[in-house]
Image (tube, rainbow, N blue to C red; front, side):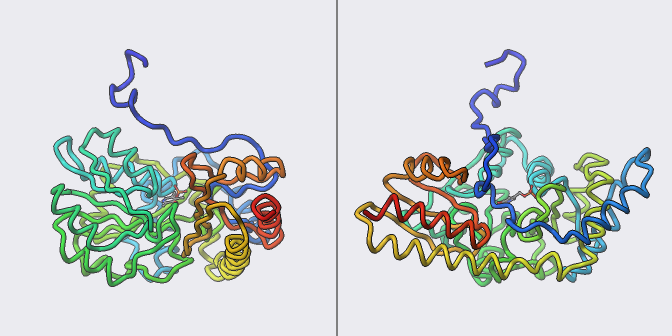
Length: 352
Ligand SMILES: *Cc1c(COP(=O)(O)O)cnc(C)c1O
């Protein structure tokens, strides 16, 4: 407790990313594949040619245009952020007042609640059941009951890996009066995007990131996509030079190679199948309670009664995963070699 801190900070649960170094990093859903060396060389060259003494383009126009042409969206409906994390914060500032309610779900990406609490609006968090399934009905009823001004959820969900069908998201968009933020950070691994509907629904904002499927977590680049009116509000609230010259250059170059930067998606899905099948086999043989969840992302969500032992054994092998300290674990999908190593360690521990 500090007397100078915003009172709300004192009760806030901080996001705690792992800071230790492990050889195999399967804790943060980054891509296990680097972007192509040729693309990185082109980025380096472009950075060398920039004198760096001038502020970046405040609206990151070229990156938005490039991204828009890849995603088939007009650039005036796109705003770039220093990661989509920053945009979540900007969106809470832009659309929520103290008396308003932000509706979110648990478990889900914790930053929605986090930023809502910092802003000091009301946060209504609905707990998912044991099956971890979020339905359109839960969202619609939750919005009515809490009179939500804004709804945020990830689709497919981090950390459960489960996605809502496009038709269900549409049902939500049509049945609520709230602004609906659909965070599609993992949509490249699933295929129920509503990105093409930002014109049809005036209450829809879609979030995208370069950090997961596109292998660029290090550059910090995310996007919000919506109708121009909503995008202009976000632009008005964001800090003027929120996306650095380095990031803009990296994005511009990378989005010139849309197929190259997405080509690892197929391998990641394949590796996910390998790990899932091994876990299924372990589940059939183990005496421990092991639950698996189907995933439409680049990670697997599992529940186990000896979750701490799993975490410890993997750490001993220099592998870090995400331990939620409540029975649930989230394992980002690594290379084939890495997922096989994880599977072997789990087999040794769980099957005697
Ligand atoms: C990783 C993640 C983000 C953050 O992406 P950045 O663009 O790296 O800030 C946003 N939403 C969800 C659901 C995520 O899992």
